[in-house]
Length: 493
Ligand SMILES: *[C@@H]1O[C@H](CO)[C@@H](O)[C@H](O)[C@H]1NC(C)=O
Ligand SMILES: *[C@@H]1O[C@H](CO)[C@@H](O)[C@H](O)[C@H]1NC(C)=O
Ligand SMILES: *[C@@H]1O[C@H](CO)[C@@H](O)[C@H](O)[C@H]1NC(C)=O
Ligand SMILES: *[C@@H]1O[C@H](CO)[C@@H](O)[C@H](O)[C@H]1NC(C)=O
Ligand SMILES: *[C@@H]1O[C@H](CO)[C@@H](O)[C@H](O)[C@H]1NC(C)=O
Image 1: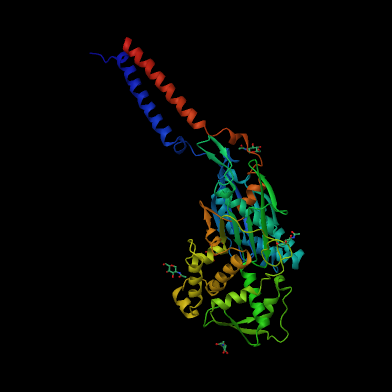
Image 2: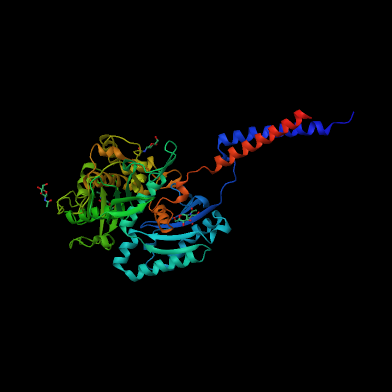
């Protein structure tokens, strides 16, 4: 007997369609996103040219979601070998050459067809701010050389420049709140994009090698705020950058003060260095920084002195406090330090860069009560140089030497400088990343310069994400309708 195609075909088609409908239903439940082709990405590059080193960050984002909040993420980062670009005063071309290995690697990460449109920036911070003060023509020359090196690559180079301390602070604040989706969030309940309360916005604490920044949304309204409008909302944040109060420059200030107060001309006791440490240092090199302007070399100092560690946290903090001026607040209001106006710190903060590195080494990045942190730091400062070297043989020895000093500097800066208290201390989270992106000023800088944070809520965001849902529901309905038609045809045969 012949196989009855006219009878079986509709039944097979019916089965296939039912299977499709079920698959479509399952897919729409698990989220159509995960099975759809990945959207095409766009890329951007930012060099963070800091005082002690340079890093390259490559960011990516889906092309069709350019204006949404929180969609840009870090896809690659590269540590440039050697020291910061401001150290290339004798050979500026080498500063450019130093960037090439990282650029080569970035070109392997960014698909060739996306490179030409990728914006590329270099932002230099406090190391170059100091060099520009001391020697503007050399700092210009270095910026020109690094620009030349980046132009050799097929990217859309948008300039190499020194960014101001206030910009650095504000861009760090934008980066954090962008990564944590604090500016605007899609609310499933309201079926719309909503503006989270200001309590959801985090302050930014950045500690570099040569400068340090504090940025937050104050409760009181302030006169000289840094104002911007993002996604239809106005923000006026307080931000200040203290030049020469980055970790390295601050600790050099401490040595200069100790040297001026020292009774001996050949040895210098340093309470922030571990017992058993004894190295000879060049005195002149300590005073040839722009940060030494108002500190003069003691006339009777030898050209070399022995820096001898005495490992005492209490005396260390006392020595550090001497580089701050806490008394000359002329603003009839609150001050940070050195007479700089600062509203009372308020809300939660993220402390990153050197705050994080130091506290991470000391296992103190979790939230602990202040006395616990102080005890841990005191105990660490008690350890001898020999003990530290045998316990942490893999640590870079300059860093190992400085952890006690850095930790005490951080405590002094946060508590005495910015005015965090025993209680508000616990509002500070020590963190290096949010999502998979490093926290720093670079992401906020790129977002701002590419207009990826629109000042008004874009129309594309207003109509919330119904595309995939509408499409899959439509697909299911059509499939079921076809199945019913086939079923009816089959039934009447
Ligand atoms: C992003 O916003 C800008 C300005 O509102 C607009 O010109 C651009 O087309 C938007 N891009 C996307 C992908 O929606
Ligand atoms: C940095 O230097 C090390 C050792 O010389 C080398 O292995 C590494 O590839 C260099 N990295 C970059 C990005 O230049
Ligand atoms: C430091 O080292 C020098 C030379 O090695 C030595 O003369 C001096 O006594 C040492 N100082 C201390 C306090 O150990
Ligand atoms: C300055 O502060 C004092 C004490 O807080 C207050 O009495 C005084 O009115 C303030 N002056 C101004 C000009 O705000
Ligand atoms: C941090 O914790 C690790 C693992 O417990 C330990 O080996 C290390 O010594 C600790 N570091 C400090 C500075 O106490």
